[in-house]
Amino acid sequence: MDYKVRFLEKADLEQVYEIEKECFINPWKFSDLEYELEGNPVNKFLVVECSGRIVGFNDFMITFNSATISQIAVTKEFRHQGLGTLLLNEMEKCFPSEGDQIVENVTLEVRASNVPAINLYKKHGYEVVVKKPHYYPDGEDAIYMVKRLMLCR
Ligand SMILES: CC(C)(COP(=O)(O)OP(=O)(O)OC[C@H]1O[C@@H](n2cnc3c(N)ncnc32)[C@H](O)[C@@H]1OP(=O)(O)O)[C@@H](O)C(=O)NCCC(=O)NCCS
Image (tube, rainbow, N blue to C red; front, top):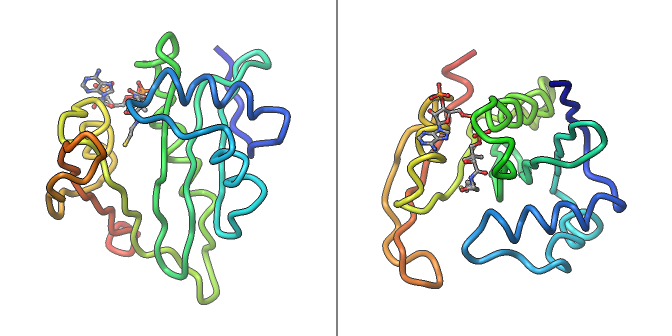
């Protein structure tokens, strides 16, 4: 299949919100997604589309020498086709490669029970740093993971 990765546009928000509700236990509100697009100065938001349909996204931010993945998701029927991988790789291509904002680390939190996501991150060089107890509203622990890019270059 033919996939295209590009930055989020306002017209995509409804489709992204549908994926958000499908994929997360505590989905963000529509207004949270709008804020990411229009109000968050450090946000970058990639979507992957297939035949004009948004099928996944990677919402991340870059602050100084660090990037943080806020949310990454692929709609169920398009999983296991390498799109999570594609979204992680395309994110790294967005990082400044020179100047004083070279990204050295990518960080994230993931639910301790989220084996698919933890495996995805491990496969792409992310390491478990620490467990954050009771991090989520329902009491589940988070696993804090980091990818050290400077070591990989
Ligand atoms: C996590 C997620 C983005 C993966 O997307 P995907 O497009 O299916 O991922 P890929 O096809 O690129 O898979 C890459 C690797 O991830 C891991 N993986 C993906 N799905 C998995 C599953 N169901 N079980 C175990 N490992 C899995 C595997 O290591 C896989 O490599 P392999 O194909 O060689 O086995 C997707 O499952 C998803 O959207 N989940 C719901 C939202 C979510 O939990 N996001 C993360 C929040 S931190």
